[in-house]
Length: 281
Image (tube, rainbow, N blue to C red; front, side):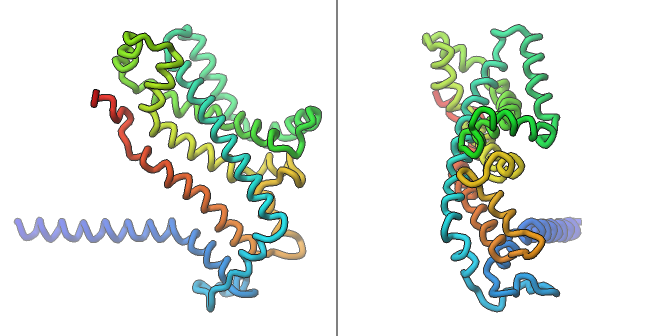
């Protein structure tokens, strides 16, 4: 019995590792294909049947996308993504904290949360044209402000609902102790609640950054040149006359880097407990 049990356990472990390996390969293959395509020479990126391993590695595609105005568009994406992520996370956290408290009547809180949720139901394309008309009449077309306002508006409902769960799960005794110490609501939020919800803030900030960094619809409608972002630039590599796979893959590979850096920087908060440090006195 003992031998059979050990054998079954070993087989189960091997099968588990095989399944994990297969899943990792499936997840990682698109990234590998993107990077390898960006490093293929000449027309090798568009040959059929496809070449899975480049015959030699070249960086011509990266040199091509890093020259001239593309660096400006990279700066545009960074400015818009960082600014909108910061504003969305801070404003969403404050709104979620207010909705998680009992100072507001229950029916008012429920109505506000329902209204916030409804704003996420409509596809962005349904409001794109009237939204463009409003932005143009305000004189904000092709500006950073237009994109930042848009991304904050569309990101707030998600951040509020996500952070609401973190705030509601906080032990009430922690805030009661802060009240006894004479902390105001703002002091409790800034000095007590926010440090305890850093894991939640990290998660919401990562999702907000990914949304702002990858958003294409409104970036293509609201910008023409001055505030154009990288997703819009990538779309220009496709036309009815050409399809520049190499340059498109190179820019796509470069777009992964800021997201990975941001996620790695927030990683230490992702692995912490929600109330880490609260029981240490």
